[in-house]
Image (cartoon, rainbow, N blue to C red; front, side, top):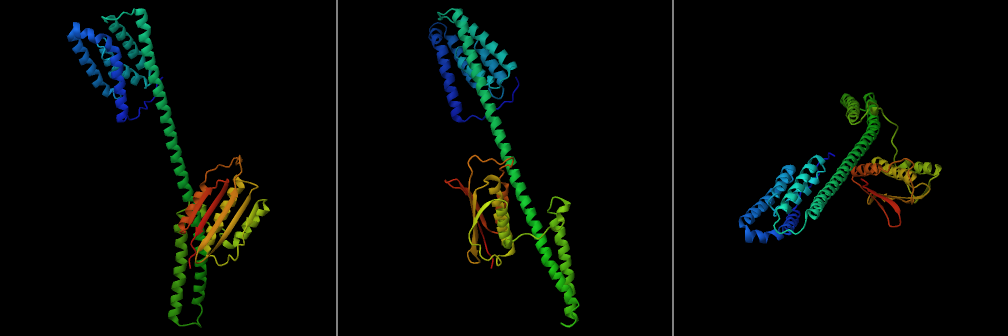
Length: 385
């Protein structure tokens, strides 16, 4: 089995408890022999102690050189009981890599060194019939625990990678939605401004031939207005065409809807079978054209969402405002429990596009789900004088 190492960075506390555990294992492995070494062969005590300290120092490189460190420390246990704790941690750390070609040789070395050390134990009363299974059990538990830790680390790393990928994809979708919304607004700008400038060109052209209005200077000025307006129209189409994805997007579209088209939009929804309840809309003629288009798009997107995600529910639309307070629109509908979209993804990009559009005109948009399971979209748009 070959896997990629997913070892996380260890904090101070992680290092501390690992070394405390190593010292505890060392104490359990050495306590039977340490008194005999001190009383009978003190040089062996100091050698054992020195090798134990060396093994503790070598543990600092167990992650950068796992195979070499595990091999050296387990080799030290041929003559050193105090290296037992460090050898166990080195073996566990190596096993977290989950590579059998590394684990098997070091595991066999650990078994041989453990049996060799036990054969030199001057105070042991146990036979090899007990020592061998006990050593094998310790080595097996160490390797199993290390492989479990490595598997868990790999799983967490995979989940983190998937989460990062999902966030990146969502950010890309959001950016794409904003770009698409800006492109659609650019098309609306093209159509509206083309209409306005066409009128200016037409009237300015008429002034050129109105000889009864004034003298040659006015005629010359009107000619300049005509030429400049026409050139502005051509350049505007060229510049806005660069903002679109496809060459066909530069083709003028039908006139964009405004606030006065809102009743037709609601009537179309009612005709399609939706349940819509509106307040008294009042006169929509005085709403500026840019503001009216944004209002229309907000209501249109809310009706679309309700039709996709909560069909057959009652949609309430409340529109009101004045030049002093601005224009406000509230759209709400109950959420259907267990409703599915019949293949329509719940991307939320329509609301992202609305937020972008509302932000561009200086307004505010919010949406939320109430405790009563009702989805509400609120928007406020400034009404320029």
